Length: 124
Image (cartoon, one colour):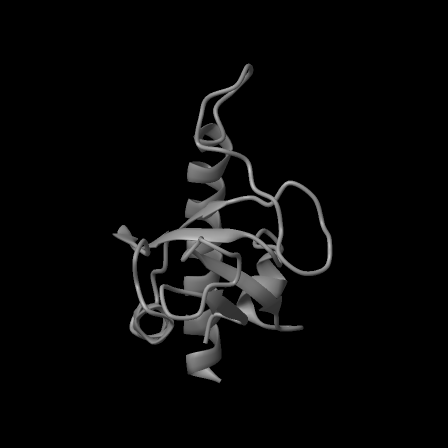
C-alpha cells in the first residue's frame, strides 16, 4: 500500500457534517512515512485527479488500492496537530502565495518518490 490509513466518507463521517476523507495514521517505514510530506489529519481531496467528495469509505479505500504506481494526491493541510477531529483552512484565498504553489510541486515529487520506492521494492 501507500503506507497510510484513512477515515471518513459519507457513511462514516470523521467530523460531524463532513464526509471528507482524512489521513488517520501514517505507517512507520511506509511510502508516505519515508516521503515525509503527508501528515496525520490531512484531508485528501483527490487521488490521481479523481475527486473524493461524496464517496462512501469503502469506495475511497478502493480508489487508493487501485491507484497504481504513479499516485498523485491533492490534499488540504491541517491547521495544527491535535487529538481527534482536526481543523482545516477554508478554500478561500488569503494573502501571500496560494497553497497550490506549494502543493502541486510537492505532490508531484511525493508521487515520484512513491513510484520509485514501489518499483524498487518490486525488484527485491
